Image (cartoon, rainbow, N blue to C red; front, side, top):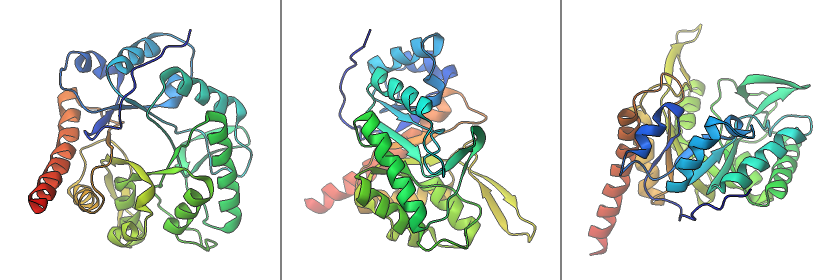
Length: 291
């Protein structure tokens, strides 16, 4: 049986990644958050408690579906079974947004527990564009592509990351998911400027923003090495990037990701509320200028 869920407009209020341990608290919260996002792979089974809980959430809130295992940047063809399962999740829950990572995570039938980077070359561009087109044709809707967090750069790259992403969006018509924690992590690890990265990013294609926390380590040379861990609050540096983006582009649906050491629901909700305050402050300033 196909369920038809309420249709929602894309929310201005920030959202949160849905965790099973929060479901009861959320359903008892009259003023939770603007929307929820789930990892598609957690709902590729046919039934059971996860689907029962998600159905209850979807009846009350807008939903986004975020893929983490499609391996859209892999050199081999897309896994057709995985793609068909993704399609089933999308058809079942009618999400506002479907997104995937600019990364690869499988090779020769083996799946790795990581999102691995790509060389930015014309050959890679052709392959990834073909994969995005295949996904969009299968799902019969555009997807969003997320910028990666990286720890190494490829010497053979012939394009910048932002040029590569912009060209993918132009060729395929996909939208973009701007992960600001990934921008901050990558810029720190490569000794580059997050501000310069954002200045060259195709913001007109951004349909969602992700915010998350990161861990700090040190490399063999004693330089800081940030890890995209999603296990703590959003850092001050990432909040600053977010304020700058909202000031320049206006409100964009924003999600708080927190996947490890998951806190109690009020703590996660407070992170989303902090994003809401930044948007509200920007809107107030715009209204003041207009008057």
